[in-house]
Length: 144
Picture 1 (cartoon, rainbow, N blue to C red):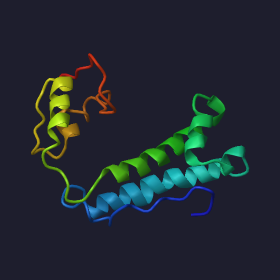
Picture 2 (cartoon, rainbow, N blue to C red; picture 1 turned 180 degrees about the vertical axis):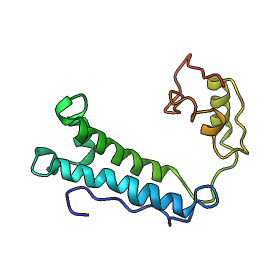
Picture 3 (tube, rainbow, N blue to C red; picture 1 turned 135 degrees about the vertical axis):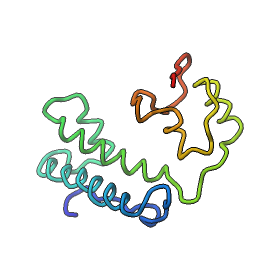
């Protein structure tokens, strides 16, 4: 992919997350969706000061500016996807460490169904996009 930004390789094979996430889904999401953010970013930054910046600097320098909104959106999504892939691990799961399980219960007022596909599904994040697990915030609770 020509340009200063490259699609980073997945940290595992596309089929490594089966049966939870299929190779076909990974191929579409990584190989097309994520790749499109990187391609669009390269097209948008060509010949600009952003072309010589690290991705994180592009995000910081383009946030909150109407003129660089498309650059920000594509840079942030390229970074977000790369981060997301590195948060996943084949053949992982099971019980979280006791301290984390306790923090989840205290923060959200529920005990996660640890046999579900993931905590996000248990908490209904797909229905509540504001329920992102980005850190514990005192006094924040999400109802089912």
